[in-house]
Amino acid sequence: MDPLSRLFGSFPRLKLLRLFIFNDDASFTVSDISFRTKVPKDQVRKELTQLLAADVIRKRASKDGAAYGANRKFAYYEPLVVFMRATTSLNDTDITTTLKKAGALRVVALSGLFTGAIETKVDLLIVGDNLDDKKLEAAIHSLEANLGRELRYASFTTVDFRYRVGVYDRLIRDIFDSPHRTILDKIGIRT
Image (tube, rainbow, N blue to C red; front, side, top):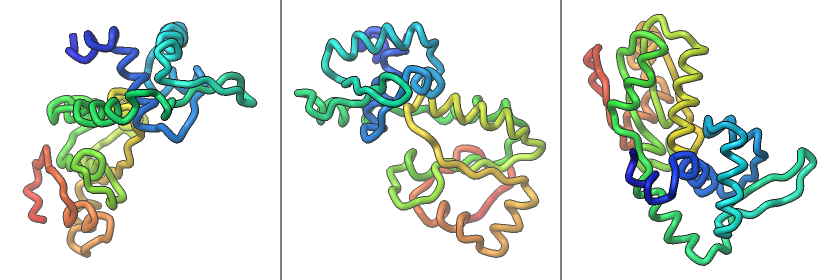
């Protein structure tokens, strides 16, 4: 079991905390929370009760029912944000293993959220052959559920990626000219 799960009581609670902390300007319904974290609705309701009691989140009325959001007035809000940012990450193996479910990967590069580069347009670059779009979306959603945050990503076939590198495509340059980490490279890119 993840040490943070033990510290915060459960992995679902940790996922909810990440969602609220990393999206502190948004409010979510129970359905939204369940979808984004991949936690069943009954478990979401249980964890929301605990987080409300701790005053970490607040409840608002909305047109779709109750909506929940981070409580920025929580006494330890800033230290909690710093702690969550410092301890939330996925290792490279987890990322590639999750993405391999979508097809044959050739290149996976991390930028943006993963490297702290604020001005990049993409957090994750995926190059592969025979990538199934639905499986890729499911893999990305799985990563997002663990991170508590939406990921901006771009995917290309190997041929399209090589072409874009050759013509100095702005998106590709944006990724490789900014701080980035290439965690998988089976085509020998030189950027």
